[in-house]
Image 1 (cartoon, rainbow, N blue to C red):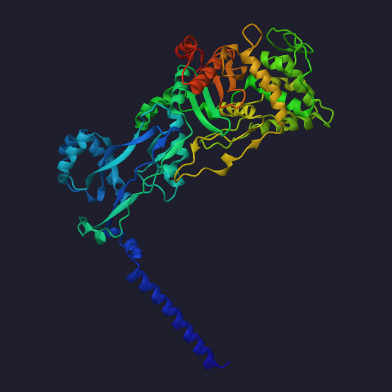
Image 2 (cartoon, rainbow, N blue to C red; image 1 turned 135 degrees about the horizontal axis):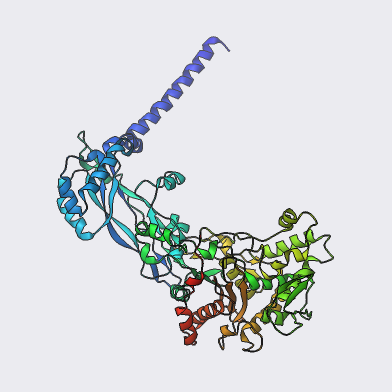
Length: 613
């Protein structure tokens, strides 16, 4: 190719590139105002419009979190002119020193703040706001803003609902581009779990500012204004009436009460006691220090965060594993002489007739029986070593939803702990341990740690004869999707037929009648066919914890419950009555055992509980 030809091609290329650049500049500067608006931000004022936060409903359509109007006083430091501090303080009903302090702080950070409007006073009284609105012309740079805040027509539990508060810088940094100072966000509970659905989308009006920083007019008659988009309403799985009743039953007690609809995995009730009262949620910041000082830690959600020993309710899991492994059948009988004896040691048990078969062992909650059950599992000859048998046991237990997070949509859920051969090899050395070294896991003690949500899920799993749906607290509704995983069945490694064998024992534990040796006769309600299992979990912090799981009716179950009460003694003393009263209330909408209900509601166990450190 000649030199002239190359020069011609280069010239043509330059012309094409120049044409593209000119066309783009024409589009940006003449046609598309978006870039012009962004470049002119210093001459424009964005008046933010906050959206209405989505309403939260219970499963029956009752509002449990709504909105009401609140009024804030804002200041744009760069627009403030000389004003009468005493007059403003009088109008806003605050001290002049408060205004002086805040203005000094704004002045110090003026460069950083720029033309941002800062919230100077939150939630002033409506009459104060109206007085300020009448006299606002005296205070350039100050303005009022109406915004919605939460209100709680139903006391459905502060830990469950969660609170909304102003975002701090750390929160802003973790959500880049989504929040700015003065914005609010859900911090715990359902408010946090569904923040993206509930918060909506902010809007704004754009105003022009003149050379003296005075606002003159709307930009382009509002052509580029954006209306706020309200947040989506949330329909929860919670039965608010049942939630309130559960809170009454757990009043002055430390622990948790969880109820699940077995077929769907929908959480009907989630009580953590003591908890945060809903009266504190609308202005949580004001009560924050008070709540933090409470030695019983009401913000700690025991239902999903407390890794308790499950106690004897865990015997059901060991029994089911034995049945599946073929090391146990319903006709096997094991002795119990006030416990399981090994060498000079004994794992104790209460007095009852001996020997026992599976159904009776569940009914009477025999410790000795289930020691034999786990011994047979771990010494099963089909495994090369106790390590292999232990890890198979661990896999079975994990299939029930233990040892890991269930995957609930409720925030801050913990997974608990389930031991494996690796743990015991580290503790005792390879080959340095045997069944009697870890005998306590036979009865749900030792290294086994579970949350109340997990043992409620165990109850639902047994009720379903071997499967569960991941427990969740939000239902699908208009504009709100539910993760497909919440519709899927999660199967255990145990066959359905084996569950029927333990359910009969659970039915007998409740319905065989006082004096028969059944441990949960106090939970019987004629006609409801409640199936249950008591637990008395050892507690290094004081008296034993009272545990009970149950479901009803036996066939076609509608509700599964776990009650866990700290320092309350036997499972039948407190947990079983609480859980059975909740079931009766849900299935019949009334309670027949009014004397029992009165004893439970008026019972105060707080004096037994050591404060948390």
